[in-house]
Length: 339
Image (cartoon, rainbow, N blue to C red; front, side, top):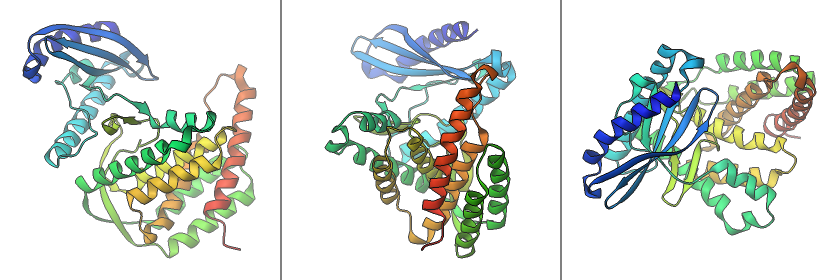
């Protein structure tokens, strides 16, 4: 099915791209050079050849076999609408890092845009962890700063009025997540540290926080570092208005969670988090709330568990043990009372 869809996209691009790139001259060819399978979609890498150069295009095709035809179309329409909105907002402010939408293929269950070439930020973190000296040249810190600046620009460009912060609701969400995490093996002491620390922090927190559009999936895996700077290509989960710190918390939690790998030491994740937070511009008053939101994200990762077949139960148990130890350490660092 996906093969039929990409054929239709290629045919559609042949009619669209000459008008989008008139400076490139005569269209010579539109070719698919590879694809990457994901859980609910494929990413096809498309090259458009002109008389005067080439353009790279990414076609994200949702899997109708898993989502159903209507489900794939609805997801594509939502993502295309989000991408188009953010692209226009950034374009009007002369900001970079959002791929240009190329046509509307949502009825095919697809989102097509210019391809932002580079390395996922998570790959850079992993290289720094595995290759001695890789982090010594400043790339890791620079990439973290650029990611923080991009997110700050995104939130400023889509800023809305202040939003009342419901600390009681957040505590309730933490309690639910802690109950689930207890079922995965998280100890009562760690749960008390998390909940007592969160209540203490939120009692002194601001009652209203900046709001904006939020991506809800701003992770090192979805941040691309290229020669042109930072690019973010996935807008599927974007929400038009929520507390801006949500995105920062998801990014920081995703970086800290990499410590579950034995080769990814805390020195590397601390550097990334500090450089990112400084570039994003987290105020002292927001730091406390951000710590609680980050812990909520980490708990969500732990409580979700690892989806595996029963034959791989040993791996599931090993993952839970590693994550339990990691959550305990994260709780003590972030929310334990000062000695």
